[in-house]
Image 1 (tube, rainbow, N blue to C red):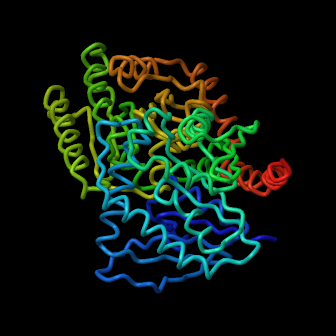
Image 2: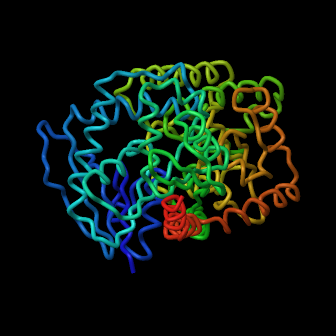
Length: 468
C-alpha cells in the first residue's frame, strides 16, 4: 500500500493532542491516524541561521518531520507573502493586500528549500498531499528535482475569482504552480470554478471537460471536496465534557442565562466586530434579552506581528468595551471576550452548553467550528446555528439560520429568532444538519480526495493529448 505524505506549513504531532489545535491541524491529524504515513512541514521554532537538519519524531504509525526556518524566512514567506498578500486576496479583501517583491522571492525560496529537504525522504510510490496557500509552489519545486509521484493539493481557504486574482503581481506564476499538481481540491464548487476560470481566462489554458484542464504542458483536475470532522468523536467529547470542571464553571457563571458562543482565531475575516455590533442591536431592539443572555467570544490572538492584526485587536477590544459600557450592570455584562485558546474537549463542552452558535465570517473556506457546534448538541435540546452564507459550511448546513455577515441587523434578528425558536423546530433543523455532518466526515473527505488522486483520469488524458 502506498504511503501517504502530507505537507503543510505547520505540523501538529499527536503527542500534543490535548493542546488546542486549529481546524486544519486536527483534520490532517485525523486523516493520517488510521493508516499512518509522513507529515512534513515547518517547525514552530525559529533560528538565526539556516539549519538543513530536520527534526524527526514518531508516534505509532505516523512520522513527523519539521524544518526550522530563520527569522528572515519566516518574515518574508509566512508574515509577508503568505499572510499579507495571499490571505487577504483569497478572502476577497483586496484593500488589505500588501505586496513586496522580496516577500514573494522569500516565499518561493522557502518552498524550494523545503522541497530539497523533503525530496530525499520520498519513496517512488508515495502519494503526496500538499496543503494550503503557504505551499502552492511545492509541486513545481519537487518536479524540478525530478519527483514524478502523484501530487495533490488542497486549498483550505476560498479561491478568488479571476478578476480579483489578477490584482496580485505574479498571479500567473501561482496558476502555473497549481497546474503542476495532478489534482487541486477546493472546499466548494464555487472555488473550483474560479480556479478553472483562471486557467482558461487568465493563462489561456483549455478545459477538457469534467473539471479537467490543460495548461503549461500539464493536465490538472479541479474538484470540490468539502472537509468534514470526526462527528461521532466530537459528539462523544461534548457529552463527556458537559460534566467537566470548566463547563460547570461556565454553567454556574451563566446563572440560567442563555449562552451565545463564538469561537474563532482573531482575524479580520471572521467578522467579530460585526457580531459585537449585532449584540448591541439585539439588546436595543429586543430589550427583553437584557440580563437573559451572555455572549462568550473566544478569540486567541494570531499573527500579532502584522500591523493589520494589531489594529484589529484594538478595534475589537474597543467594540466589546463600548457595548458592555452601554448595557452592563453591576452583576452582568452582555459580552465576555477571551483572548486565549482552550483544548478541543473544553470547547466541545462549551458548544453543547450554548443556545446559539454564532459563526459569521465575512468569507471562509469551510469553517469547521460550525460543524463542531452541530455535532456537540444535545439531541433533546439542540441549540441554533447562526451561520454566514459566505462560509463554505453554508453549502452543507442549509437549515442553519443563514445571514449576511455585513448586515448586523440581520445577525441580531437571527439571534433573536434562535433564542425564541421552539424546541420542535430546533430539533428538526439540527437533525438535518447532523445527518450531513455525520455523513461528510474527515474520513469521507480524505478518502474522496485520495481516490480522485489515484484515479486513472490523469494518465488517460495525458495519453490522449500525446496522440493528438
